Figure: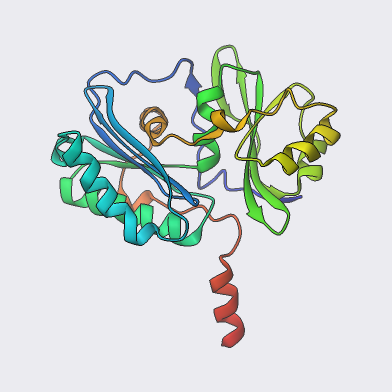
Length: 253
């Protein structure tokens, strides 16, 4: 397994379930880390608008306009936001870059803190109370998956392994027996896991694996409570694997 120990860059935030209170929170949340993008507008602790769509490879052409349109349709004043939450990856190089650039622009323009969150944390947190241990997976290409283990003990949820890149077979070997698998897996992948795990009951069905940008808010609040400073300079993308474009450039040089 290709394990990337980014714990020094990504402190493990401990969340006492059911999680930080959203009361009176105003926020803009952006997730464009993969081909499926999501934005959420939150006012006084209520999600006033949220949208998910298949962005493909067109994040840079769609994200800003979608955000403006959603704010207009929901009568949400972008300047009312008190914090910005953004998904920092892993996933698509262009998607991560576009989402972070948009979020950083909003943070700087509004003068509010910004907090980043891993896509793996984001996809798992809504299911934190459904199993003692959860395994988050996102396709990484080349037959591998970005992944991390999360667990709950005494009502406290946290990441319990480094972020990694591995095959499903490798991940299955390193996963506790009563683990809930979370992530956008297709029928073929679920079939592979069924063989590896001896059944599919521990794999969430597709409708439950949609990443919702709104859940960036409790993760951002947890990061702030754990000491994150909310500064743009502290925000770092999480690629886990060098972007293909970087490798190609290196070969040309």
